[in-house]
Length: 198
Image (tube, rainbow, N blue to C red; front, top):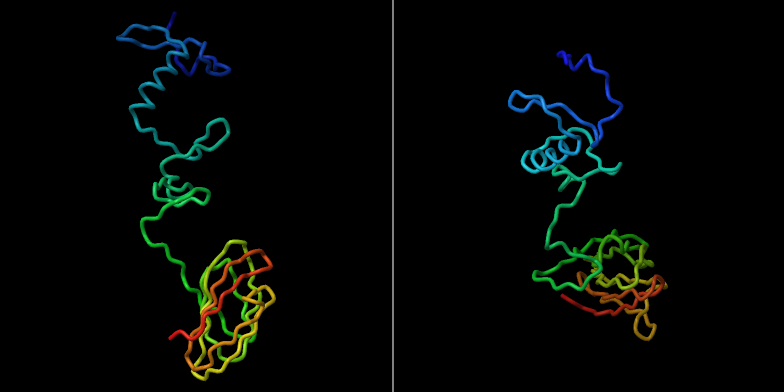
């Protein structure tokens, strides 16, 4: 067969494992199948060489995770990552931030932002029913009198104190009271009031 330029050959419809291909082995033309070439590619090129890709690498139409995704679009593995659906023991202290509530005539905590809250009263106020309640949430609300003192606090209907009696705040200027709570349902907060902290 006369020498033919590759550019002069008729293009195949598609490469296939059953197709045969010509190679040069030590100066001699020989044939290999697509299956042999595939085996070589998997065994040598992919296992022994770092392959660099640009664009999106896919397998069967689904994106394949590559190293550059780890820590950016995909969370890196961390054996210490806490899980939400298993029993866990923590070897270090766990802390919840104390979020300052905005003082105003009506004070409305957002229970999605934190478990613990503090507010300094500059007038007679109402602690309204929180938003974003979830059964099982627990925490504390610190109630602080301003420099004037004698501020009063009314409570939204969700707050359920012992015997159904709403507590009275300590009146001294700068005094601190605390409400510890457990959300029983989305419409009921069991609350325990402790007065007159320093």
